[in-house]
Length: 233
Image: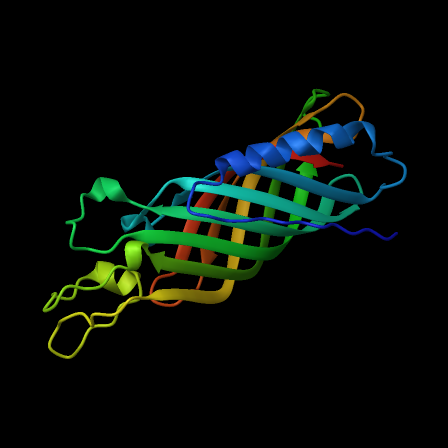
């Protein structure tokens, strides 16, 4: 069977929660158009939510939004595989009360992963189901400072500068440069989710939480996206 999907995502400074919810709303009208027999054996999903960074990057970043989408194939009643795309914004943690002389900026994480999922679609003959998923893939973390930030002269080196990609000289001061930098690396993820069947249509509402770990340079990328949305099959 042949299938294709076209996706356009624009990731800006604002959180992605609204984008995820809009995407889910756009998916709902497809419910009446998809013939389950025509796509038997396939699955796809779309959703969004919030992302929680964990240490070490949790020391510098706070909550932000995410968008997730994926498509794959089912094998039997319980097993499936899928290729998933994740965008997650990671906002600077202003609650840490950094002095105004320290840099702030925006961070975006993009990931394409292949995942295996084991599902139980109905618990005790109810519409409620549960699944676990595990996989791995490629992650890209892109960070840029706000307002063309430049380091004041004779600024002592601190971990926050290393996080944003600045370098320190041998005397312990920060080089006065403007930086925009990215880091790509492999990573793994795993998590659990719950589903609720939407009548006998093949559609399910899902809510899931995954832990992602990628070996990006300077600091590993570690976060927990919590997402809700709809999936088919």
